[in-house]
Image 1 (tube, rainbow, N blue to C red):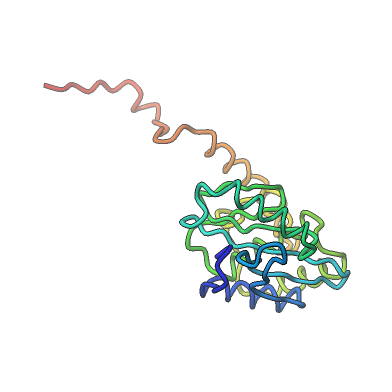
Image 2 (image 1 turned 120 degrees about the vertical axis):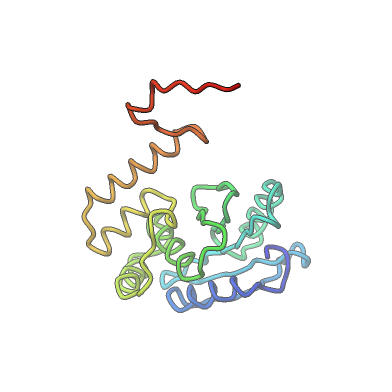
Length: 201
């Protein structure tokens, strides 16, 4: 992954699915300024833009944020891609607004859906490609859960594409935000439990 020229099985599956939708895909591109470094994937959109994609597994990329950012800048400086989008596995944090955050051991179809939604949400792809993405997502047998789509705007976009009720999706987002604010390990007790006294010998 990342700087390794050999792709994992998951990366290959992700590439194949993205290439079906975006087209013009290439894998493991060497960087002219440093042949030891490789870009995982590159896609050329119908509008002529080139999107570089990196898959960052949590095990290999934990603590390597600075190196990952330097590599993204080098990819753009070398003219390999116009933009680098990183698919970052939990618990890795996003390094730019364009990055896609996914759960550990997420399936390739779900990773691809999350990525495509984010490309549309961030206006990375042209209108023709965005329309194709929408059509394919509607026809897809994979319907991701809110746990798999970590970006609120992408979750609303997915709902719009699938004609889901907006209020229902927005309420799901509010529940997720409340859960994120709740301190870890804290549980909500019922009123009948609040005045119980526990004794220890």
